[in-house]
Image (cartoon, rainbow, N blue to C red; front, side, top):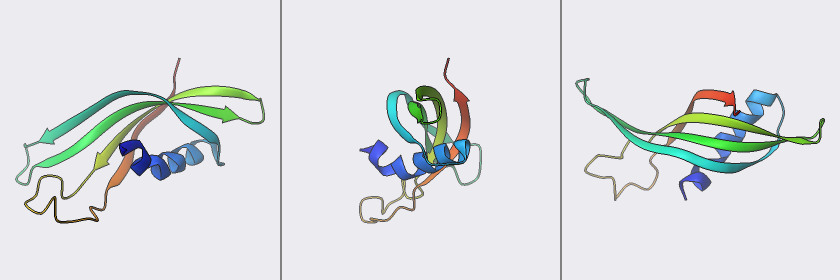
Length: 101
């Protein structure tokens, strides 16, 4: 379900990487971690994911394997209203994008 929620963001990341929209699919979710940074006055919580994606290169007619490390911020994740609020304004940020070897 999480993949379906972030699919448009992943598509934008891949499109930005290749300068055009590509056909792609999730190959494997390598890691999903909940990070809690309590070193600040207002602590931060987010998910970090590593995903391997298969990107089809139309010009070379071959599949490329890429690795994405992303950060997913969900502002109301640990608030009192987390179950009441429907629109959490989830934000996906690219940390690293590299070819998977």
